Amino acid sequence: MYLLIDIGNTAIKFANYDGQEINHFLTLPSQNLIIEKHLLQKINAAFNRIGITWTMIKLICLSSVRPMWDGVIRDLASNHHLAFYQLKKNLVLDDFTINVPNPRNLGADLLAAAYASYHEFNKNDSVVINMGTATTITMVKNHQFEGTVIMPGLATASEALFSRAQLLQQFEISYEDAYIGKNTKQAINIGLVKGHGLAIRALVDEIVVHLKNPIIVITGGNSYHFEQLLSNYLFDKLLLFKGLVYALHHNNLIK
Image 1 (cartoon, rainbow, N blue to C red):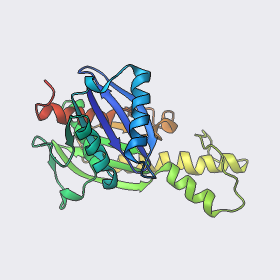
Image 2 (image 1 turned 60 degrees about the vertical axis):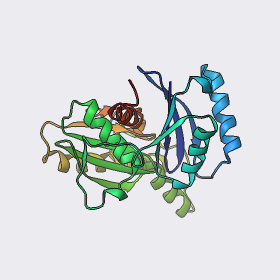
Image 3 (image 1 turned 120 degrees about the vertical axis):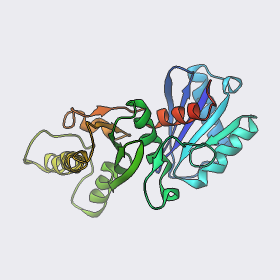
């Protein structure tokens, strides 16, 4: 059993891989640093729920965009006498090129999702849309990470709007299949959700002309809002975790 951890800007996600399937079993907020004791309590409770013990874990593999957390996870591995591997630290991805001027600045989440798409889709060209705190649109071409587009994520845009417009009451946003709003809620849903989806589609349309028969895949916590509008894209909530698994395989850490 392998423990996979994805530390994003707003959430820490945990999954286990048994050699065949990935099971995402726990999500915690990452805005505030939780001390290791409390983190361990939450992981142990989740382990009990799904029938896992620490003795079943062979190693921990991490993708992180919040360095303040890295040491906590590293200590967690050390305290349980587990090998610790982290994307962009001690995992070699020499079958995949990062074609940007400063590869060190590339976020581990972008790399993991792009690496997953490269292997998951038989090394075909692809466009990877990751919908989290930011929405990113990444171009993968000829076994290379060619670059990305970064825009405010759906929740980020929503929070900005409601926090700055005093007369707007916050509500749970959702997709509206309409071209004009007849009330405030509908108008905001069209502008925020549908507008976000249409912006993604327009940017993807600009990218795909530079690719050969690309596969377009969406992942991330906000992706479910767009299953109707972007129904011709693939949806894969586990894509980033798959990137970690492919990285472990490439480094001969999974037999």
